[in-house]
Image (cartoon, rainbow, N blue to C red; front, side, top):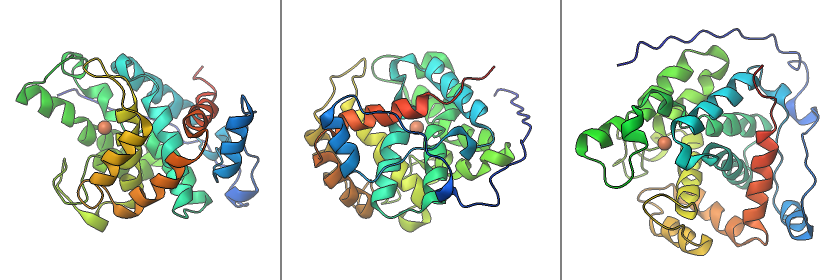
Length: 256
Ligand SMILES: [Fe+2]
C-alpha cells in the first residue's frame, strides 16, 4: 500500500461572522433561454471559492482524480452539480449544501491511490481488480480525514457506495445509518454514470436512467432522494443545467 501522508495548511476563515446565505454567489450566464428557464425552475446556487479555505486544494484533487481515470473526466464536477440540485430539492440549508457540494467534488478522491492498471482497465475486472478499485472508498475517507478543513467530506468519500438495503461497500451499513450527504451523492453518482459514455457501453437516455434509479428506490437508493430526482430530471433543460453548473464549479481558481 502507498505510504500516503498529507499535510495541508488551513487558512483562517474571514467569513465566520456572517452566515453563508449573505455571501456573494458565483454565477455564470446561461448559454440560452432553455438553460435560463431551467435554472430559474431549479432552486440551485453554486458557491464561490471563499466558501472553502482549501478551494485550491479541492481543485487540484479533482484534477488528480480526472488524471487517474481519464475516461471519467468531469464526473466529479457533474456529480457535485447534480448532488447540489438534489440537496436543494430535499431542503438542505446553505451550510449543508456547501458541505455537500465539496464532499461530492471529492467523493472519488481515493482513486488517486488505486493502481492505474485496475482503474483504467476496459472490460470486465477480475475479483482482485474489483476489490482494488473498491478500495477507493476507504482511501478517500482516509485522505480527507487527514485534512482538518475537509474532514467533513470523509464520510461521503467512504460511504458513497453503500446501499440503502445494506448490500453496498465498504462497510455494509444501511438506511439512515448512511449519512444523508452520502445517500444524495450515491444517487447523483449513479445518474451521471448511467448517462455518461463508458469504454464498454453507450450512454443511457436520461429518462431510462431515472427509471433505473426508480427501480432501485428502497433497495440501492434512499427513496427520499430518488423521489426528489424525478421532478429535476423532468425539468426542461436539465442536462444543460447540470453542465452549466459543473462549469461554475470548474472555474474555481487552479492551484498555483
Ligand atoms: Fe466512487
